[in-house]
Length: 125
Image 1 (cartoon, rainbow, N blue to C red):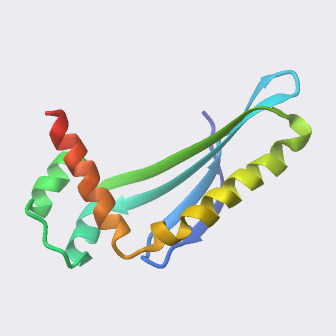
Image 2: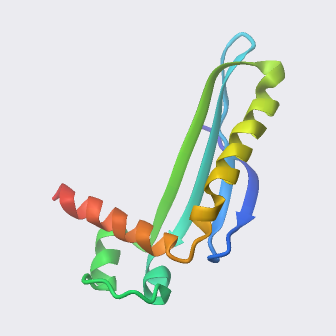
């Protein structure tokens, strides 16, 4: 899937939300409109500045997750008329940003997300 960066939003917690267009043509003049929102979270940085001590060491978490963790959400609409593609993409991305910006901007979000990913990976073993 070819992604096109559409918008970058600087969050209050020093993270950066990137909005990508991954839309693709289905058949004729019909499209699958795909909006992908992502935040690249540096693991050691957010764990050190999080203020909250975790029972796991930073090194242990990095060994499991790596240096960075990717928060990613996708929203899709299928069989969109080519004439409406841009409008639908804007509506989908604006709704996502407006409904999640407060949560994604909180000081606690990056650390909580990293710890959640660590727990999920640890439970797989």
